[in-house]
Amino acid sequence: MPKRNNGAALPVNRTMPHSQEAEDAVIGAFMTDSELFLEYGDKLKEDDFYVRSNSLVFAEIKELISTGRPADFVTISSVLLAKHDKDGTSYLDLVGGVDRLEELTESIPSAANCEYYIDIVKRDSMLRKIIRTSGEIIDNAYTLEDAEKCLASAQAAIFDLGKDNDNADLVPVSVPSTAVMNKITRVMSTKEEEVGLRTFYEKLDDMTTGFWPGQMIVLAARPGCGKTAFSMSIATNIALKDPEKVIATFNLEMSAEELVQRMIVSLSGVPRKVLLSGTETSEQTSAIFRANETLAKSNIYIDQSTGNSADVIMSKCRRLKKKLGRLDLIIIDYLQLMEPTKDRKGNRQQEVSDTSRMIKLMAKELEVPVLVLSQMSRKIDDREVKTPQLSDLRESGAIEQDADIVMFLSDAGDDDADTDKKPIELKIAKQRNGATGDLYFVFEKSAMRFKPAAGKWIPKDKPAQDAPQQEEPQAPQEDFAPSYTDDDVPPEQEDNDALFAALDDAPTDDAPKSVSGILDDDLAMLRSADVPETFGDGDPQA
Image 1 (spheres, one colour):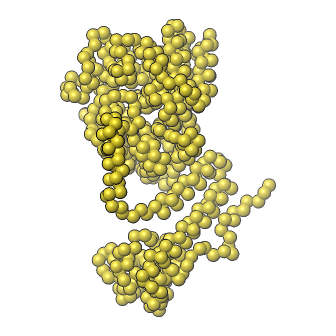
Image 2 (cartoon, rainbow, N blue to C red; image 1 turned 180 degrees about the vertical axis):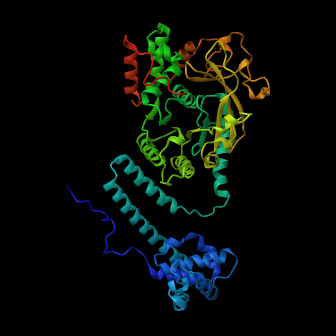
Image 3 (cartoon, rainbow, N blue to C red; image 1 turned 60 degrees about the vertical axis):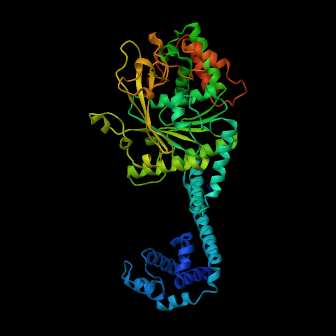
């Protein structure tokens, strides 16, 4: 068995990259001219200095100037003399005494070249970080048994280095305004509204103008309100109406087969119990196979790993985007089940905060909207007023801070006694670039899908503008609007007929075989004469 070469990335006979001359010149320049620190000091951190005495002096210069005091030979030597380490040694002795400070003030080749010296210090600092990070990556490769986690950890470490080096300067407003005016001019000339990724829930798209690249969208609910079903309804809407869009979905509590089964039920309108009992009619069978055809043409990718962390998900999505050339939406179900990116030694709130921040960085780096599902705190059940609030997001206020949009699903009233339909309120509680408000849906529990509410499903005490602007139909089965836009599907048609009509208009270009194996398994089950009444351990939680 080959011997592990622990620490081989850091040979003991080689010195870390550094230039003491450049470091001394920078510190000396700052000590003799505080204006230089005000101009360039924000480009450096204490750990950018390899020589410890320079790091200590830089920290004192920074503290003095930030509190409005001069940072010269006298003040720096005074504060260093007053501070001691745990052994009782003064900082002044640690840096080499007064003689060392005098040496620094006399070591400036030219204060005019200060920026050049800073670039040398930053360069060597980054090289040292790369060396240390490479050593950690090699050690993980020897010790971690999961290659996927090892790769994700390596990519996250390199990504962190890039963040450390991201110190963009201020830019004049004319630079971004040019891009903004180009976009406005394009909209004015084409008369086409600039929108993000459509969910094909018309009122939701009107309020949000779609989901935009870089956005973190949080969908939160208590168990049983259908947050998984709602996210899958968005995915199937896109699969039906815009099949070239690439969607990556990560479900940490359901298998891929369960998710595909839900999507087939949602698209076909055939209840799950009928689907698995073999009692479907010929029309329902046709609807099932047409739903399968829609999914086969879609670009939905499913990951059912249970131990995903934010850096692992980012790694997988980065590879998928590189492979396909695009990525339009990431769905994560759900945040509290994700593995922590860093070990916080049992501090669950900090772990969730780290994960939330990493999801936001994922959206920005990959330039894709991320729809992340979240649990809500049980405290809402103890309140007299059950209206969800931002403070109800479970385990961390960081989720509220990082999110661009926060939406809550909650019961909007009692279930209908004669049907399995459930009125649901979608509350947009936060929208960084838009209005907040309430929308109403009907959750068809047997079909695991959401439809915009109308008629009796709109609470009577809500203002009319909150409801879709259409007349209330007379027949009970038509008391809610269809799943898709009214222009595409006549409201008087039956659900399956509406699906067939929409499917006939769907593009027929080839799609990747991302879920074909899963679909084949489900269809084989449907063709079997002996079909179990339940799937897996029973009905998954909506």
